[in-house]
Amino acid sequence: MSRLDRTRTSAHQLRPFFSSQNLLNRSDGSAQFDFGGSSVLCSVVGPAEVKLRDEKLDKATIEVVARPLVGLPGVKDKALEQNIRESLEPLILSGLHPRTMLQIVIQTMKDDGCILSTAFNAVILALLDAGIPLKSILGSVTCMIDAQSSEILLDPTTEELSRARSTHVFVFDNKSSVQSEQGKMNVDTDDQEAGTSSLAAVLFSDSTGMFTEQEYFECAHFCFKASQAVHGFIRTAVQKKLEKEYQQTQA
Amino acid sequence: MASIKVEQTGSIISTGPQIVLPGDLLPSAETGLLEDAPTAPVIKLGPGLQPMDDDSIAAVKAGVLKHTAVGNRWWVESNQRRYVAAAGESVIGVVVGKTVEHYKVDIGTAQPALLGVLAFEGATKRNKPDIKIGALIYCRVSLANKDMEAELECFNPSTGKADGYGELKSGFLIKVSLGLARRLLDPKTLILRLLGQHIPFETAIGMNGKVWIHSAEPKHTILICNAIKNSEYLNKDECAVMVKALFEKL
Image 1 (cartoon, each protein chain N blue to C red):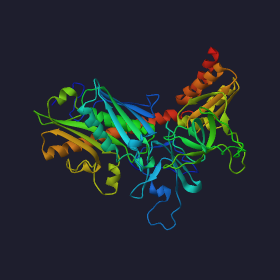
Image 2: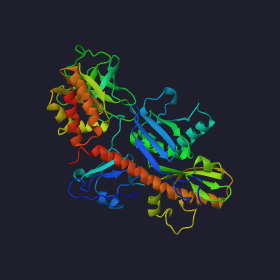
Image 3: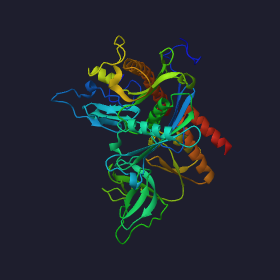
Image 4: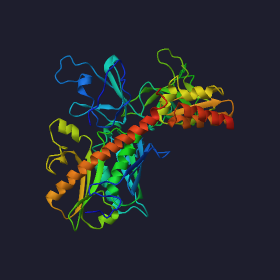
């Protein structure tokens, strides 16, 4: 079946990625991440001074602020803040900077579906730019199940999402292949049946709508595959930035 | 994907920069961290590397993995803008407060650092330096602990001499990234050599990304500041062109 989004031919094709780090002058780290027509800008300040009220004696206080495209922040933005903060808290080694504050501001720039996934990827790039100590990196991909054809579409646009029976957001860390080496969980062998496999590395999963258990695991499987592409992209982005910094010191 | 290939030829990795991201593991075979080895060599971890819960060693910052065979030291060289104090580093700070025993100095860390009023060359209880709020101080971090404010000193404790530390009078302060500050401290640094060919100037560079510049004329100071800030993402040729263009406009 062809997609509503005419720029793509396959159901498992992602929109083109774009990212840019160190955009903002006065924050400690910043990044923009785009999935096609969806774009999120994220800034990180920290480790900075914390208000006495929010101070934690053994770790950094993590504050996430989400700003919508237009208007004042509402319930949706508060939910996004909470989702991102709760997924990042185990990832950030906040014990290394006790009694400090880490403020993450997320600004939606363009919305064409999958804002939560775009925000996750923008946040991780901004945290890398700020040099915040992390346990691992993450990559996020959204998928949906079409109401008519029951087909799984990766990275849907707003237009496609209007026909969704259910949508699923997944976040995976980059340690999954390590785990497979250690024999804990086999994740990315092609001949393995869909589902069951990839859940070892899930950092966050959010689903809305009606779906069966099997459909959920299929979605997890496809999103896991796609998240590998996001991880690869993040690695390339960081590599490009470092090459620019090192060009003077190399002969 | 998660394991990184490191070739040890000589003291430093020779196969170009090894880029690591958080979560990448140090290869246990190369670092001599094989399990149950009774003669396992001692490994020293620098910034950007942390032992994980399962006894593996993983990078926690994005940067270039560096290694020296002497002492088996491993660290990740990364760039950031926020300073986290480390003992022994020279920094530039602004005095923001004063108590009976300490000056409070903003060195760019989360909390202001403490500089003892007696931590100067030749300072006694009778004869203390009088430093105003807002003054610039070039000093050394004497104590850095993640749970406490950093402590600073303006003299070498083994000789009692100032060693160039102290208040920086007049001049101009700019803020650059920590990576650029480290690069400027290299005696072979390109941009300072290029600028030095045209005009004389004084500079003090703090590891906290603060750079103090003093020259004969304000227009020279402004030019030097701009040149240093512009040089961060340029290559050698572009740096030379940039400096030449700036001086032609002067």
